[in-house]
Amino acid sequence: MMEAARSPGAGMPGWAVSPPTSGIQCGIGCNINVNERGELVIKKVIPGGPAAFSCELGLDDVLVRVDGVSVEGDSTEEVAKRIVGPAGFPLSIVVRHLVPVTQPPPDGAVRTRVQLRTVESNVTLIRQPTVHIPERISEGNVGLGVEMLAMPNGERRVVKMQQGGTAQLSGKINIGDHVLKIDGKDVGTLRTQEELSALLTGAPFSRISLLVRRGLHEAPREVHVVRSVLLLGEFMMKYDAYHNSLKHAILQPQPPSATGLSQHHLSPASAQATRRPSDASPSASFQGRVVRVEVAGGSTALQPTGKGGYAG
Image (cartoon, rainbow, N blue to C red; front, top):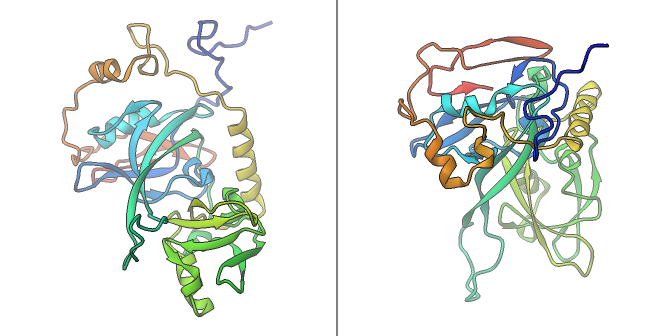
C-alpha cells in the first residue's frame, strides 16, 4: 500500500497536516495595483473567487499583511508571490479601509458632513480556482437584498432578506434588525424609497456601513458589509462548499525556508529583516513576466496587466 504524501513540516512541533490539494497554483480572485501613495490596493474583485465568496474584501481596500508579514512597500509582483499558492491552502490577509464615524461629536455639535475613520480587518481565505460566473450576473449596481419597513421613529426595520443576496451572504444582518444609519446618514431624514435605495445600492464589491440595533435593549452596533453579486442555484452551492471548506481550514506557517523557519515563526522585526529587498519600484510593470495561474476548472498562464498590477 502506497504511503500518503505528507505536507511540508508534517510531524514537526507547531505544524498541522496540510489539506489535500489538486496541485493547481492559484490565488484569491482579485486584481491588485499600487495607488499614488504607494499602497497595494484591491482594484477588482472577481465574482466566484475566494475574495468574492469571503464577503469581506472590497474595492480600494489596502493590503497591510499577508500571513502575518507586512506587505507595505512591496511591489505587486512580491505580494503576488505571497498570495499565490497550492489550491486548498488557507491564508490570512489584513486590509485597511475607511468607514464612517457613527458616534456623535463629544461636544454635542452637529456634523455637517460624514466623517471617515480607518479600520483594519483580518480575513481568512482558502486559495482555489475562480468559479466562472457570467458577466451579466455582476453587471450594474447591487444592493443588500433586503426589504425594510419604515418605523414611527424613523428607523428602518428589516422584514425580508433575499436568498443569495448581500445581507444573507454576509451573515451580519438579520430579519428584525433596526437600521439607524447608512454610511453615516440618519435614515430618519429620508423621505422617499428612492433616497433609501440610492444609499443601499452601489458597485459590486464596494463597501457599505450600517448602524444597526438588534433588540429593544441592545446598544446600536456598526456593521460593515461588502456588496456582493446575487448568488443563485449552482453558484450558491459553490459558495456553500467554499465556506464549508473554510470552517475546517487550519491556518499554518509557510513552508520552511533554508534556515528552517518560515516568516510566520519570526517576530515582526526579524521577519522584516529577512525579507528580500525590492529591486523594483512599487509602480513598475511586470515586463511581460507571468506571475500566477488561475482559471475555473483548471489552470493557465496569466499575464500581468501592464499597469503595475496582477490578475488574481
